[in-house]
Length: 358
Image 1 (cartoon, rainbow, N blue to C red):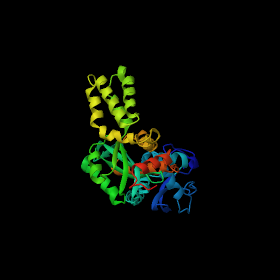
Image 2 (cartoon, rainbow, N blue to C red):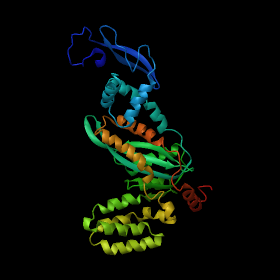
Image 3 (cartoon, rainbow, N blue to C red):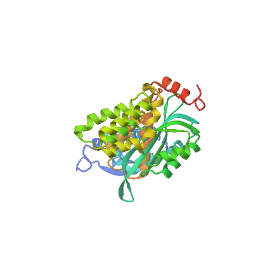
Image 4 (cartoon, helix red, strand yellow):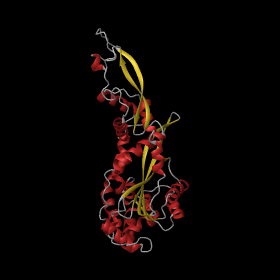
């Protein structure tokens, strides 16, 4: 409209034409029907360029809106972007309406049936700031990612809530069971409170593998800089040991060397030993498939971009919509099995012959 009239909204002009409010128009999109406001001028000579006169379908526009939202942009930022680039005045309310049309799809996706077996499942957490009842608080998004029998990754569930407990995690795992999962061979996670107990109840045969990379990172937080390199080297000698017996011996050696200076750091490894040791059944090449949560890192990087665009989400529902869209954006590229899947599967079949068929 500014280009058509020859002056900006806040400027004055004597050219005989001026803005003349807006006119409501009903349009169709890939997510349903909407009402938009089309700017008018007094001489009725303005020709909208994005939603043209008599155009009723705006599917291409709502896809642009969804794409921008998936990248973490707020409704205000999207509204400004559409006006700056396309000359299309879209209110924040209209953009929210477009996004709300996704809610049934999100619910359907969250409740879709799952396969009966996932050889490997990862659970990871990312923190977001969310406004609720005018109070900004931290919410945790828990991402549950499975590797199916073909070695391909699937996001099984996205749960947003506060810090978990065994009761919370039991609810999450029972939900996965109710959607069809009967067995998980190995579940890899960071040290999420209550998860270990919930796994033993919901999936008693599942081995819980602690993410070794996170374990090392958390251990080194309390180590002085002058000792960090040597301490990390000793820890690496433990988790890269050829078998559990050698690993236990190296842990004992590290104990004698470091416990006097860093008792809490070494106690962490003793307390978590039962969820560190499952990796020692497997060859070095196979261990890397599940002793870290690296399989989920590419997805996490997509989620972190949401934080870089928004310091605070206006509501838990807004966060859920953004996570859903970011997930679909990231998983478009997931067309191949995870690295070395043939070898990984082969060893899993040998280790769990009654649960995973060759």
